[in-house]
Length: 238
Image (cartoon, rainbow, N blue to C red; front, side, top):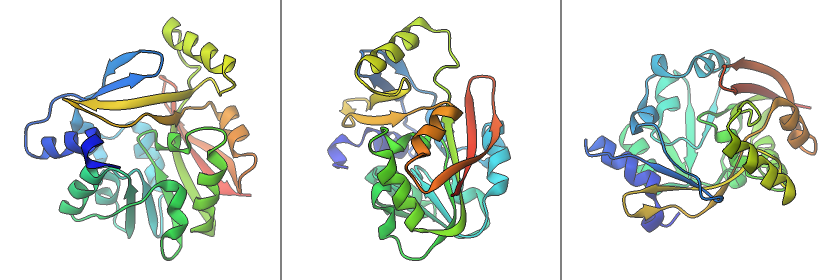
């Protein structure tokens, strides 16, 4: 990512410097919302959501942290962790905190050396599969860089777990344009900086199975879920 558009990385750096404001999330239907405070990207394990605290117990062996951000997953695990992200600012913060963090899109994960036993996709980063069309490329790349008995701990949100009319209308818009209901087109804004628009996919467990269909992965188990529709699924190779 061009540093000029790295709103997320700037937010993390400002948080480290004690000067962070608030991140703004914009959706392509015009919806604008204020994100939770930047502290969440630095939370220690005991401060994570209950579903993440439950799921992380399954992380073992050599771990790949997809969308590593400020490095909270790597710093919480007593094992070898490699983090990848596309945000130069986030990578700088992670490295300053002692994390082995590398600038790499998840579609290029197969460029990494060695094999991983666990892939962690927390903070809704399963959504980085992007779209139904992009997902097989992402999932194949992760298959090629993992062991035969590897697992993916995939955090996402069931988009149907809402009664909000604005979100329901967005689901209908997605259906009309041939997309999954929970396919988001979003960007992050911070102060005067905005990231490029990108796709972020949220899915129900049944929709996740549909997305996984052409890939080497199956939904092995929903490990933990919360009342708001968030859940972590464990994926295993077919």
